[in-house]
Image 1 (cartoon, rainbow, N blue to C red):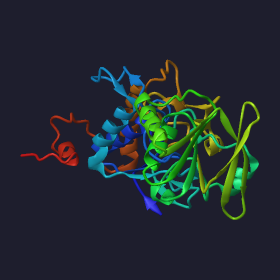
Image 2: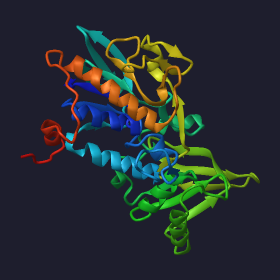
Image 3: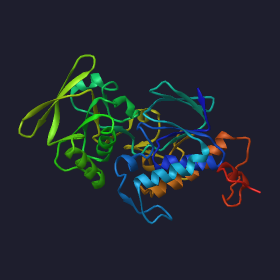
Length: 339
């Protein structure tokens, strides 16, 4: 059982800023996310796309925003639980119990849902036999690249994740990069580096091909790919990595008894609490009159939700608003020395 002041579901920018706002108030949080790293849509969908509506930052990329938010919350030593999904939520004595698919149980007076419009999950291979090898020979994210050292790895996809991992794993693995189109969507610089590696035989690239067959016994042995002209090619393969983007699923959240409005959750604008005491929704997942789906709106929602979280986590203490510039307590929490 992991006890904490708040469980945050979602490690996108709004979830990360919620960690910051809770931390400033002296509250500890645990963050759970389906994906393998922090950043949410910013990292998975547009890491290099410029963002122009973050206050005091004229322009930044999704990757830069995520990195800055992680740097901002570093003093709070927050625990992240990646590749993990909330399966069940129950309430006991005004305390929420959150259980995940990895059999972790969290106990907290507060839950902050910051998971976008539903939770993000990797788009998977469509072949039925792929399920037999998921988590063993077929992966949709990389936790430990050393698993693939000296192995034959077939990478499917045309975006940044596929290109980044093709480049990285080419240092330790035999990589074949397969994409259903000639054009790649990833960063031009990364693609240029991969093309250089192709010329010297460090990476094999197959375009206009898609997966048509998987063969193996206990472990994956080979795959067959097919192009638009029905031409097939068999490739010896130890591992498949699929990077086809994300799909959004509401998942178990739909069963928590929250006031749902289509795929969003209705909240009040005083503290962004749902109809369940102690469960808050911020970011794209929440809705209210006048709602704007902007990152900066989510930051505002996180700030107000954190105040109510403090009141629930520390009912015997009076909440006192202080400016960060004048509060010694806040500066100490940020690791700053005070006189």
